[in-house]
Length: 115
Image 1 (tube, one colour):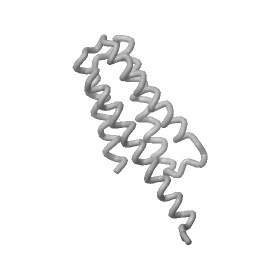
Image 2 (tube, helix red, strand yellow):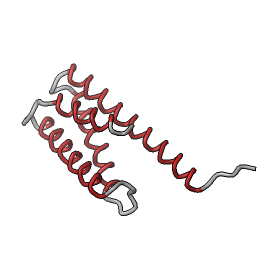
Image 3 (tube, helix red, strand yellow):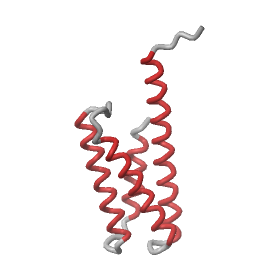
């Protein structure tokens, strides 16, 4: 018979979720990198930026949940980063910026923190 505690199950779920988050960041960084090569006005760039905004929108909504287990200060900092990312992506989409490299760097840094 298997004896697994509820805490072990939750810990396993957290590990799986963290891996999915890393994969999501890998995906958006890869898309942004390819889009940067394709050009600022390319359809690849538009798709990469909207995908990035969608991802951060999801994370911000999750960070706002009462049952989110992260410390409040970390949740606030991550939400702030997410809002900045969404705003910067919007600036690129609306030709007010061309700084894709900053978005790539920030998302790589956040992804590295998910270890």
